[in-house]
Length: 319
Image (cartoon, rainbow, N blue to C red; front, side, top):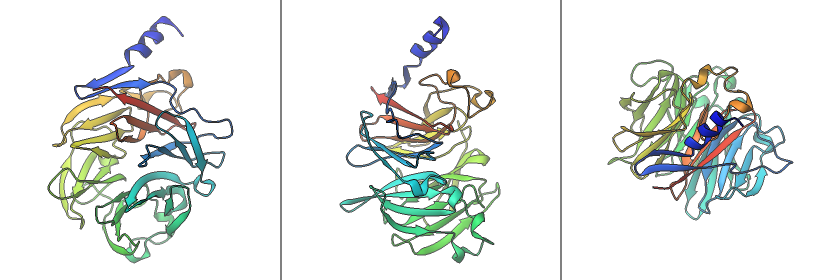
């Protein structure tokens, strides 16, 4: 390592601002020899503080689980490797479940924390917007306080599909476009509970904005500031976390104004062969293709990047 690169790595170990200041945890989550990442996409935490990574593993382990310190716990999910993409954890009474959006498989599944399938949903024929299942390419799932869930067809026709907690179809809205209520790659979706009423917030990625809806699909407003190519969302208290694919993770306050960016790589998309850039160009603490990000119970930050060999980073919150 040269002197310049060494200085760069040191300078990016502490990042953020004010109450969102973080320290990079280097080499967090080493994999055992028999497990390999493919593209890392989704990340979630359960009530025991275990971290789940959803990825397109070439070794048949689409879900990899660590404890918060980065110790490997288990891996499973051979049936989900091809389409592994969106991941959301749901606490339902005393139980917890994982909701998986399997993009290349044109389906969504709900599983236990050990990977046992509870239900499977293929394309919503009731919506009358698809000619066949290949047009339905789900990217993420959001879960409302009443248990209803919302599937974002981000890589398909950009519709949102609502279901009851029992997986019964309710309604569809959206479709491709740039006007209010329309989306162009509704890649991420989340239920924002920071206001008086829960709202659906969509990472309307190719339109470079967040778009808000009420729980019945009525358009409410846009957020367009300080975004590059928003992928998904997470909430902790009054703040919102946004993995922004073109080289940074963004943190907004309750009013969706910028608090800070983490891991900023200016011009990340212009790096040769992005996102599969050379390993020696991947500086710890700097992101090149953030795809999924969460805060854990203590406010630490985890980010999974869209890189063919996978990449997962932890930042420990220090203030």
